[in-house]
Amino acid sequence: MSVPHAHVIGDPIAQSKSPLIHGFWLEKLGIAGRYKARHVEAGNLGEYLARYRDDGSWIGCNVTMPHKQTIIGHLDQIDPVARTLGAVNTVVRQENGALIGFNTDADGFLEPLLPILKSQHLFRMARIIGTGGAARAIIAALAHNGFTLVVAGRNPEKAQALIDELAPGGEHHAIPIAYFAEATNFAFDDREGCLDLVINASPLGMRGSPELPFDWSHAPPGSMAYDIVTDPVETPFLNAAREAGHPTINGLSMLVGQAAIAFEKFFGAAPPREHDNELHEILTR
Image 1 (spheres, one colour):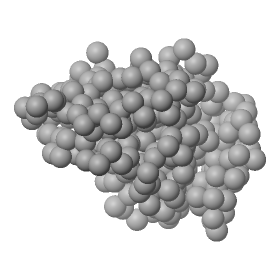
Image 2 (tube, helix red, strand yellow):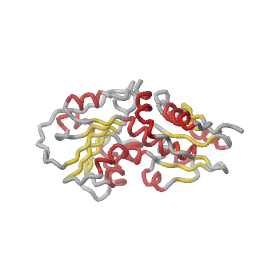
Image 3 (cartoon, rainbow, N blue to C red):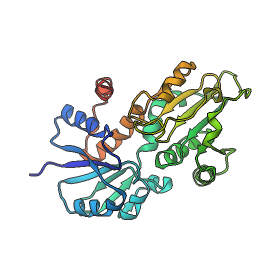
């Protein structure tokens, strides 16, 4: 009997830590399965899916940049959450070869924030940098949890379009990403009981990419910095946040959280999260 296998696809893909995560869980659970990275360029996405759709041992794939939105047109069914977000990061093959798209990014992103979100706050604000597929999930998730949003992108019109689509009705704002690059002396609300997040949901700061231009004078006292970049794990954005006295969350938290949901869809078993500390050590080597 063939061994079930899954992939993570993207362009680039060499930096992906997903094979380490899924391989770690497969080994801990003693499950016969494989999970590997596959480099798939934009023009080859349809060819890739056509090749594996008829492979009975292929159980699906995770999807990363730049395919999260374009892959939708190649699938047979889209989960309601993924359809609302307009982005797919997990594809599961059915026994009849049908491909169903899901999005686990929103729940993965929120996972490390859940203990904080259980508390009541006077006000919640998030500054989100980026307008790609991951940003879509983050915008929707935070709007649903009562945050006022400031979305920054190279194209403010695209940022505003995301707000209008995913977080209508709130007092949200779209701004150019360059706004955060220069220092400010804005007088922030420093009352206790406010929750402020600063989130890098862009590829800026990823190995081989330019750094994110963010001056920490734009962050209110006590703001939490959250970077979804995973290579490197400790980005210049997070290092600068710590130097300015802000608590931080690195991209492994979201990566492992969303991977846990995908793993169960692929292999039919909940991952052994009691080993998270060991897994994080492996991922940061």
